[in-house]
Length: 279
Image 1 (cartoon, rainbow, N blue to C red):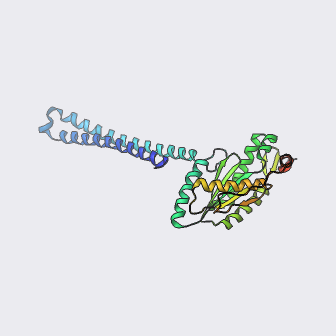
Image 2 (image 1 turned 120 degrees about the vertical axis):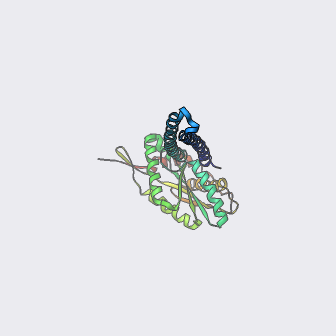
Image 3 (image 1 turned 135 degrees about the vertical axis):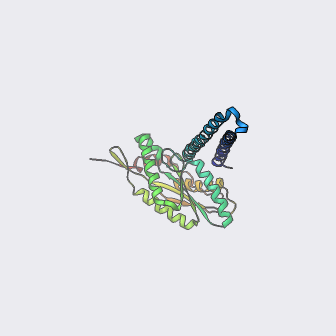
């Protein structure tokens, strides 16, 4: 049982207990009313029993309405809590916890239906250098901009989540590797043409993508790891590109680091983000 169902189960049990109490109060009130209408039983307490029964019934009805209102409030709070627990506060995308749950469920369902599941890992190029140069607020603006563009691009065809930092994950149900590759390339081109704005400046950024498809023995961890390795290869091969991982391979050959690579990366980082000021 997941967290949401467990919490709802506790909530329903508490609600049932309260309604049992209301039922007992109502039953006692009805008994008092019946006794009040029988002079042989009530004697001098006839009026008192009638009044007590009526007050008890009114109280039971009021208590029932209060419980219903309280339950509705708790349901709203629970929904807000679950949404906050599964959503990244900065971008509004699903968070890592939500991704893990969704991916595990999707793999189990796809295995039963023998349907494909593909995954794309996406990383914003030179994001650390961008933060160092323009500040974290500008970085946050870029993260929100890219997140919005990816949500619009994939729509309801995919599950888009912020994996962590400047890295994102896209899960594509019923999508073959070739189709996922095409989507990743189109997404890369779309983001490259997107203008992100912060205060009086506009920025253009690039992304790298790693793509793979789930095989019959994949778990959420193994699928994510393979897609992440493909992403890492795309970044090592020059960034602003996609790299496809063989679904049946657990390892990817990575290019050897060149002697001047770090120096070249520093120079690239200075020109990776095109900026312009508004007049």
